[in-house]
Length: 603
DNA sequence: CCACAGTATA
Image (tube, rainbow, N blue to C red; front, side, top):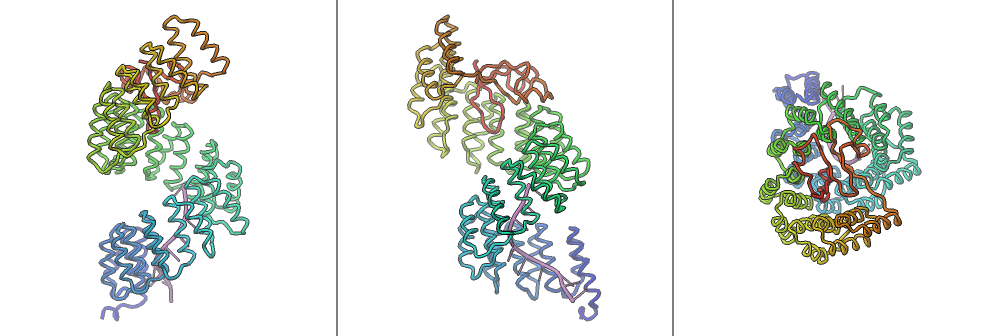
């Protein structure tokens, strides 16, 4: 009935307006038009289904799929893919099992789904079971292995597959690069050229990323000129990898030049430039890029926020960071773990521990990094009890503590004078937690034991460690000996250090200071002599903190006027940021990769 | 007339 009074020309018109609505992401409008069409055909239904799933409306998609009178293979495959995109693996599998004629695309879609969820063995089984495999199916395995860190397996598949297309080569190049084997990636490209395979835009983009990671300055520049000749510099993928490439090679001017080729509307291109500025310590420039993005209504992503906040951190500008925080709240990133974790680190480094805690509480899905950041933040700030409180909370969650958690905890105990607790933590962790105890942890424990005044016990502890101590562990003991004027242990400790690390200037200096304090001048000059003979250079201190907020030059070479520099042991006096470290200088053997501040103490 | 699915890129 309806179909008869519905002329074919009109139908086509309706179809194209539905397509347009889906493209413009006005899905509800598309649905309204769609509902007016009597007996929509399988093509249009499929398009509508894809529209739904791409907007995370799996329910609507499934309902429509259910109502379809006829379903072809493509409709089934679209529905399966849609389930996977909406992260419903079980439903995808159910449909796959029900599907009447599974073709190679259906199998490949499922394999890809399992691979993306890290279910490598299931993917492998499906790949073995599938009745026939084309190049795309093999490529899917290469990509899947690489994204699960199994590069060697990927290489095996790459070598075994019957025929390779440009996607196979590109996937393999990118996979090697993203698993830390960028040089191999570049070699593979040479091989590809040798086979006479024409690179595509994607290939160039991956290749330039490999150059960026391998710091292959010349090759990267060559590829750049080739890309210019082919007219591909305007491509957003190519442009952003070029920007990153030049930034990594410390040629930021060239990054800017690539950026200026065109008025870019892609966040990723903007973020590449922003990150480039930040990593090259041009923090003012980075923040300018960020605010320009906002001005031009380019919606920042997690990485944009992280890079911008890193720059705020580096210049110690609480105001700039607060503005970025405000922007994050406005744009709905408040609950994001990615942005939240950067904010925690930012606030705690700027001494605003209250804000760090507030930020932490707002994060919806707190991950390991969130917990570690707040823990280390509290530890740094001298709030050992808070760090401890967060740790006890953490133990009640699903998140498993790791080495960094442990370091943070030991530092917290150490700074806040909770030395007995620190020893308990150590026992607790060695006994109940399956983490690797590092030399950093041992050094921290030695420090803690020494704080209890038990130098002899600390020495025993070092000797009984299951791994051989390094010079840092002994240095912690030597440091304590100097404070307690214990010559006997100091001499044994220094001997161990000099055996392990003959150029350790800190050991010489500490020992010499110890003798000097007792007026043993002949020993002092003997040590000075030895130092000269062995050509031990005094090391300069270095910190990310600046005495005044915005003086970037100060920490370019690590030396500002207000630093008191001692070899290896760095006492940093921060006149304008008393909140950061509390009143007295803090002690910590390298807190963690999470915080750049490395402060060792004498107090 | 066409129109819908799987493999590579920041």
